[in-house]
Length: 383
Ligand code: NAD
Ligand code: MG
Image 1: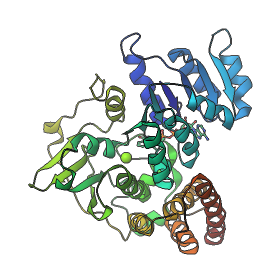
Image 2: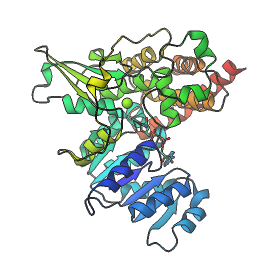
Image 3: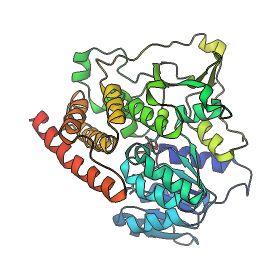
Image 4: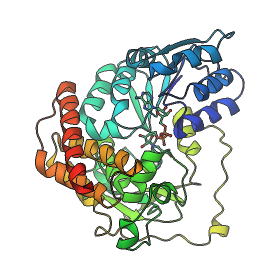
């Protein structure tokens, strides 16, 4: 197996499961990361892949040094990342963050093996292309985002017409009960301090704006045979119920578990079977109650924007995602206010509309153009 985005939050959770598995159960082909040579080398010494690859060539000397005396090959640069993604494996974890994961995902899918998909942005930006690539090679895409994994587990596919709606839960993030004034003044430290989940910085900010849930509505519309009007979001602060499927007979099937990504990752690792995962078991008596409420779309316009992009179709989700990536990076660098993240996305979408996005070239061009426009909008808002 291969892990793309090995040193991140999902990558490390995946590595933990591999290490805990019985000797010889898994062998690792490639570990791929962005720029942290020390963290990648450390993981490589434990998991013994054939090759360890960094996207950033500047880290290669340090990676080579740290792995000298092992028989683990090293490489760096975007080309090396793509080559690593194309090395034959049975199973690949897609856990790079953002649009940057798109090409390696397409490369991995071209092998026709199994791809555990955590990296949601490529599915948002290029959903049709990703699914077409998988269909062409016969690859299996396993939903690994916790909500989608829950729905995958609860979805009875024998009679798709009997699925009435699917429900994604959202913790509500750190600003669930914040006033609009508090949100306007929110710092990156406050935004990434998620009440329930421990995740990378980008998805933590997305959870605070609810863009994460909006991206997940688009992700669900790509993955499951349900039109987006029938994909619902409920705020559920305990994050015990991850996703639900409502059927025509009134049955509502849910998947529950601790808010720990090792459970969905283990499901994807062992699928169609199950494996042991040493996650804390959900103690329902200790929890004693489960709360649900409708999201507040006034303080959190992200859901409305994501649904609008999904309805507009074509290149709109690509533009939305690019603008959000730009806005989140600027917010984390203290160059944009928290509430302005949604404004950058909205204004970029309004300016660029929904141009055609039929192939990878279209999508790469749209992404690049939307980033330029979003930077200009953000410059104006931050001035
Ligand atoms: P993270 O920031 O913790 O990790 C990202 C990983 O990608 C790191 O290993 C980094 O080195 C690598 N990377 C970054 N840019 C790269 C590039 N250009 N080429 C190769 N590698 C690169 O992020 P994360 O929280 O683990 O999230 C990863 C993806 O999974 C995101 O798309 C996120 O939305 C999704 N996801 C995460 C969680 C979670 O609990 N963390 C849950 C559901 C979905
Ligand atoms: Mg999720």
